Image 1 (tube, rainbow, N blue to C red):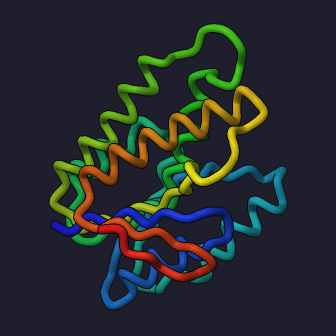
Image 2 (image 1 turned 90 degrees about the vertical axis):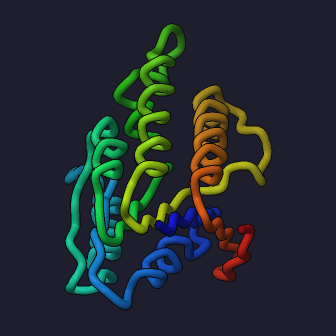
Length: 177
């Protein structure tokens, strides 16, 4: 099975590149973002992604972070997951990680481990899209540092399970593995 991790910064072209890897045949697009009808800009971003997908693709919306790892473990065919950063944000939201004080670190680690294990065990060809967070400055806020640290560690664990890793810079794919 081929597993590809597509990394890149904001607006780097990572989603379009990842989608282009699978346009020659049907695939399942796993959308990880929660729809927020009160956020018109977010709704427009989602609509742009939907319009870009080939008609033959099936869409699966997995807004519950705990369902992604088990889903991928049993998936077959070709699957694209867009995106891991949005998925992690939802997981951190659900566990109260943004708040100062005690948060569910064990839950976050368990769910991230289940995702990594699901990718490794899957019989599907998988393309994962994620933000590369290791090239910027140290964020000024606790929540920014938390997100950067958690996503950086998760990206590294996913890269370890992937056969191919690509970094998009200014729309140009750089093959890392």
